[in-house]
Amino acid sequence: MPKLIGSNAPTTSAHRARSRRLLRLSLGVMGVWAILPTLVGHRIVVINTSPSVAPGLYIRSANEPTVGRIIDFRIPDFARPYVQGRTGNNGENWYILKPIAAGPGDRVDTTGEWLVINGHKLAPMPPPTDSSGRPLPVWRQSRVLGADEFFVFSDRIPNSFDSRCYGPIRRQHIETVRRALITW
Image (cartoon, rainbow, N blue to C red; front, side, top):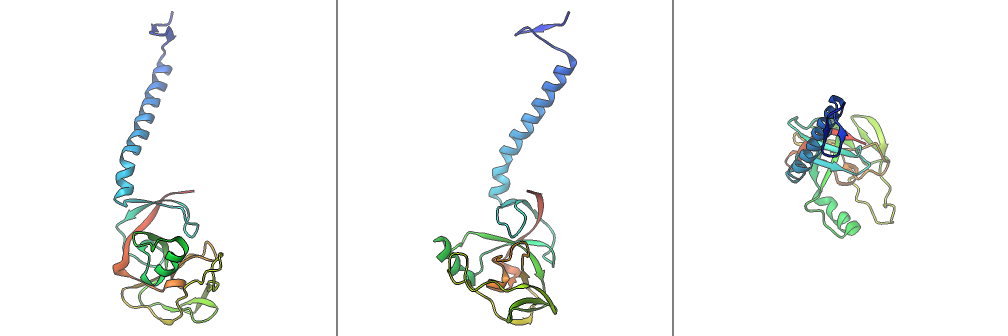
């Protein structure tokens, strides 16, 4: 006859094992919820909802910024008037998450209809206005990037708000290099 506890429910080793798994899972979820504010508050983990980089959680990396890596940086001064007009906020405490398409020594040309990096056509330049008819800023130059400059570009969406709009990002303005923790 099975042993009865409290509510007359039979206890078996399978039942005890399920209860322990459920307890461990619950404690794990509570632990994540307890530390998540610290991770997000200290920007160890950031949440990306923009379609120009895969939506998901991105963790801080110790890697140096190089072509192909994803960085986050504050909104460049050149882009703030546009951000202010679009959102009503100048974006002073906002960050942008983008992949690096060109780095020091690379030639970037945005003077024509296409973004050209080291002689390769990558994508059309953005339209003159956004979807609401507001003028988009456009960076129009053809030059070799300096020792501390990085050109960010996303080809995930055709109207990505990237260096085609505001120019190269200086190393000093890069907050961190990021890597995807989980994307959806």
